[in-house]
Image (spheres, rainbow, N blue to C red):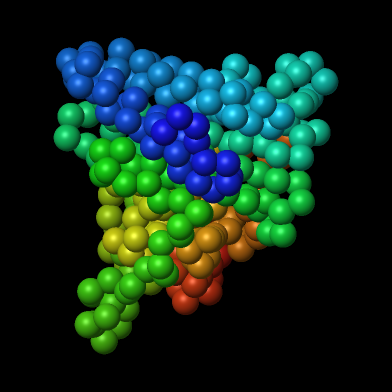
Length: 276
């Protein structure tokens, strides 16, 4: 393809796929002997590719990338012009060039992702996300808002058991401390997975029923997966039930719940009991 599709959702999918292929090629080229070098190279290769294509095809839009210098700082007068520019912009691409560097650098793991999302000032939803794509390169698929997946079917356990067995995606390395108690409370089974994008993608596809995170994330960790999840019809919010909001002065977005709509009241009530 000489040029990408111009519709934003299709462009996000194209961009996530391009970056994902570059990351797969890098894995082959460098191998897994030096995990640190592979992680660093992966972040740079994907970031540079996405930034180059956005500058070429969406030159008027602002960008917030995990790999931008100073990206984790809340906006203040002394922060660089890039931060100021995105807060004044009508359109901002929020990207995580490589979500799950740890998993990316482990041979055989496929639970890592590329996130590409577009926030727009005139969006009809509180979160402001109007397009997005989650590339799952090692799974050879991209989930996008241009062709959102069908609402996920119930898990086999939920469909056949008298009481619903909730499958909760959980961080491999940093699960919230209250999650075990919450899972016991609601009769859930914890399913350890890698990156945030892979976990939310698993909710979108019906491999699990929910993903709960608390304890520290940034906008780029969830923007693209939340865009796809809400386009699919899933519930997405902060763990207190309030709306997720993007392109904020402070890019920290430390907690979220993504789940089937029918489970949201039950899980939000349980979060009130356990997350305090």
